[in-house]
Length: 178
Image (tube, rainbow, N blue to C red; front, side, top):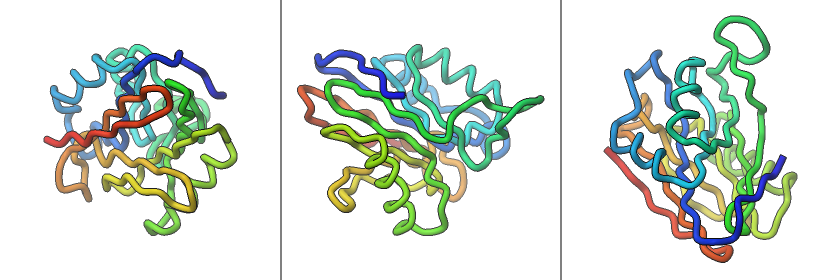
């Protein structure tokens, strides 16, 4: 499950809730550039189409991705072969990824922190999507990140994503918006 990419300063691009083509047409070009430039990318679910998954994989080169509640899973046309949770270790930090399909922010915090605790690692960061709201909080001792919607799909008010520079186990998180 967890993969390590070495301990030098690394940039991680974090996106979620693409919703192409059901709600939006494409990922904004600036965000496509940030995905290309990152050492590793994370997508926290809701691609909604296998072609979008293929596009993000091509942009990112090195991708950790999970399915969301709007993604078809299993086999057959339109299905995405992605796990419910995954993890990657970058620069000594483990990023535990899930979509976080719940009905409230409090439940989202509990769900994503719970996945991070299950994955383990020191330090560990929980990454989720689903709410379309940018979040960078500490919940019960676990740092949680939500990049919002990379396309600005409703109910988001704008397109957002995160980049994280990881250096010797320390995080510098930047919110990008279009």
